Image 1 (cartoon, rainbow, N blue to C red):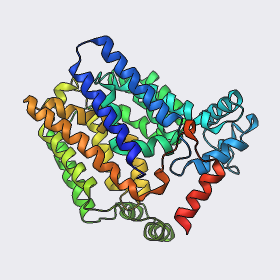
Image 2 (cartoon, one colour; image 1 turned 45 degrees about the vertical axis):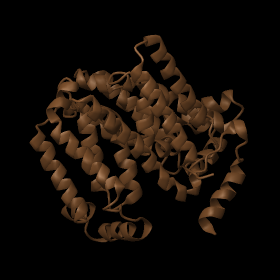
Image 3 (spheres, helix red, strand yellow; image 1 turned 90 degrees about the vertical axis):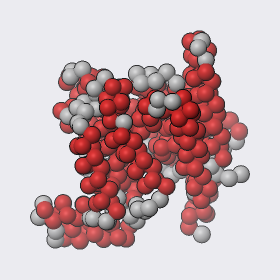
Image 4 (cartoon, rainbow, N blue to C red; image 1 turned 90 degrees about the horizontal axis):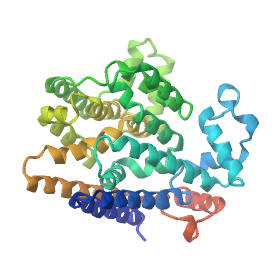
Length: 381
């Protein structure tokens, strides 16, 4: 079976459910559709086997973790994980007789709840949100980034406090997110500007500069190192890391066209988007920070994707906003069809990625050792 087929079928199911939700005027029926969508998500991802690669690090950590190890993160001599995640692991381990799959199930439920609470502020069509999440790195984020997803979800629910200019609950939630993944510290300074909605010319200027730097292969990271006076040994190490241990993000690809289209539509529909979000720039700014960080770290392929994922939530909402921006119903249908088609196109390259082989514990997933052997056989033969 082609590796991407289960994910494509899931996305198409959400497209159909999203259509039914849109066509229904019955609030109870819409509620049932959302509940069914959530249940499918939990069954698909919460009961998954060992998919992608981060389980190879999380599983041994989970197996060896004890209550006395919860604060290892603060010991520089021990490679521990953030205390919030460590506590969650120990709770799951205690109530499930040490089952790692129970941890995956719990994290999936927590993340789904946080995403639902966030998304209902922008749309009632939860099925469509889940489909768009799958289109934009959703499988990798959910299956690989256990700590990050919880941290991102907590931040998403801090956004109302940012918009209401309530610093205590906002910073409190960001600090809570940091106990699951320290990268959530990135969200702290956003309080001071993220709610603003600059003019379209500001967005246009930033967008043009970012694309020119990306297309010209301008080495942003190396230039910053030089400006900081770190152009000696540190720069040499960074250069070696850039050239040997990672690859650059490909310039001209379907992802580049997608990013170009997204930025262009935001600039064209600037006023309409501002109206839709009551003057709050959080969603649009999220998209632009995604684009800027992706281009900024494009010298480091994996890093570019992981850092930019902190702001991927903007895509989930703004692509639904684009549908609402079109005046004619036919154009809205065309945009919806394009999103569905693009979701399938984005997933098809997974056909060349054996680690995406889907398994579900209800139907007989491989054990940890079997999946490790499968991974090593496919990537080290």
